[in-house]
Amino acid sequence: MEEVVVLIVGAGPAGLATAACLNQLSIPYVILEREDCSASLWRNRAYDRLKLHLAKEFCELPYMSYPVDAPTYIPKTQFVKYLDDYVEHFNIQPKYHTAVESSAYEKDEKCWSIVARDVTKCTSISYMAKFLVVASGENSAANIPMIPGLEDFPGVAIHSSSYKSGTQYSGKNVLVVGCGNSGMEIAYDLASHGANTSIVIRSPIHVMTKELIRLGMTLAQYLPLKVVDSLLVMMANFIFGDLLRHGITSPKMGPLVLKSETGRSAVIDVGTAGLIKKGVIKVLGGITKITGKTIEFEGGSESSFDAIVFSTGYKSTANNWLKDGESMLNSDGLPTKEFPNHWKGGNGLYCAGLARRGLAGIAMDARNIANDIKSTIDSIFN
Ligand SMILES: Cc1cc2nc3c(=O)[nH]c(=O)nc-3n(C[C@H](O)[C@H](O)[C@H](O)COP(=O)(O)OP(=O)(O)OC[C@H]3O[C@@H](n4cnc5c(N)ncnc54)[C@H](O)[C@@H]3O)c2cc1C
Ligand SMILES: *[C@@H]1O[C@H](CO)[C@@H](O)[C@H](O)[C@H]1NC(C)=O
Image (cartoon, rainbow, N blue to C red; front, side, top):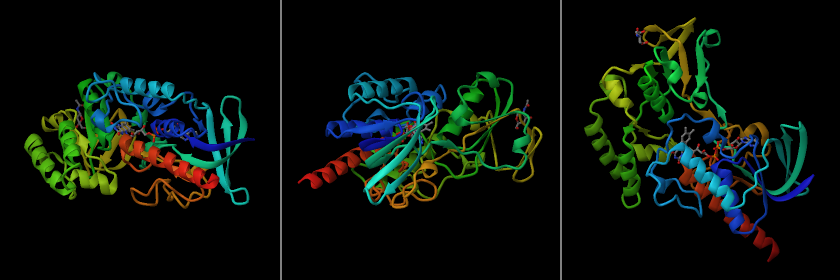
């Protein structure tokens, strides 16, 4: 058994940022990662054409800026390079192939006991940690809805995290389910590779340009969110025109208020809206059932499809391995307390990157956690 001061679960951006902040304060830590690399979501579970949706000034991790000549919207490969530089600069050495399987608070020892499995050697490793940081991500497992008949669908049915590009779908009838940023961009990618593309849009969404969101985020530093939101909605209406006619409704709350209150992001259009308006991408309602290749939609219409891409989001899996986490996480494995108090539980338990606030939120969590651990340690020794 190994005794450590801080144990971090997950070497994605949140785990790495926390490690860097601890390193700055000279607090020793161990960081465990189930896969064979850091930032596996970005390396292995993201489509080719992905760029950061937000401008680079809103996507920095603590203590390291992007190179001055970096584009405003960083492409996936360049973001991975930034993370590699980050790992090297702060000398972060994640223990790879090490999946945390359980952890519980030991009242008598006032410590977290953690059991991890070395997935290559199939051995177990035990740790005792004073502080435990959950950085396993909001995107830990793919979420695919239960649909009657899906298990017998004879075509390809994948989650967006397995989608790379539209090359293999040319000439096929493809259905994208879900209208977040991934779904809308994958639909665009499919259509531009010559797939006959349809998208299921059930929930209301704000469609914005990336420049509008950048403007909004900048103005929000000086003006109330509501004021900025009405400006954004007005400009988006001017740019995109009436999307309601094409089956897209917008939420009652404005885009920035919606993000701050519910964590739901506006869709940053990459050209999908234009293709929807031209009728190249067809908008469909919710799926009611699947029979063979035939998919039936609300209202009774049906069509035949060769492939389905589920862009239906992810689940946190922290509750699968974390016991005694009730002080911090709800039954969905997401923070119970509201922002900005979400990152701290009881008994030295913390979470980074679970507040649906992207990389800027991750940077804040990492700083807060490291500072809090520092002051706890200081108060013990002073
Ligand atoms: C397609 C996509 C695009 C996004 N674009 C942006 C953007 O432009 N701007 C922005 O700010 N945010 C964006 N986000 C949101 C967010 O910033 C990223 O998801 C980011 O990668 C989250 O970092 P994380 O470290 O919290 O989680 P992850 O990157 O998911 O990292 C968690 C790590 O923990 C590991 N892990 C999980 N469970 C265990 C376990 N039991 N034991 C050991 N290791 C474990 C995982 O393997 C993973 O490597 C995007 C998200 C997605 C999915
Ligand atoms: C393209 O998809 C739509 C919607 O599913 C369908 O109605 C249409 O027949 C398809 N076109 C071709 C050429 O298959």
